[in-house]
Length: 149
Image (cartoon, rainbow, N blue to C red):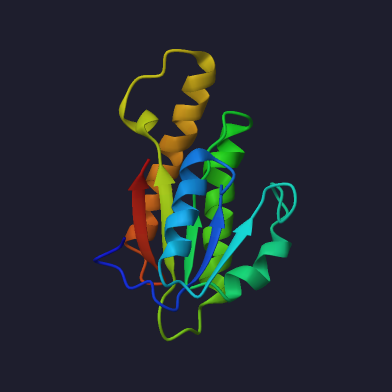
């Protein structure tokens, strides 16, 4: 895994590891030479509007992998919380010599029509995040990678 990315010795913080993609992705990372993988869980490690308990983990992370999506409270889950965690990571590493990496999993819904009101709100949240992600892609504080899941 990762012929273009050096993973040996990296410390990874992940969200969404209880989902199908996140669980499989975590397993792949743990089979590589990463030094440490820490999983943040919604409801335990953070809630919308309360990310304080993530600060220590993000201070020590080389890579933040955002691997979740939700149709419940989609704007908070899929856009606002992604942005909050990314900003905490950036602030925690503002004096670092090497920028941290953010790997965020997008969704195929960004590319096709929504056929129900629930999917419309989900799609809008993913599109809103994609616009924010574009700014992080050009942000010199981080190395941003968008993963299409």
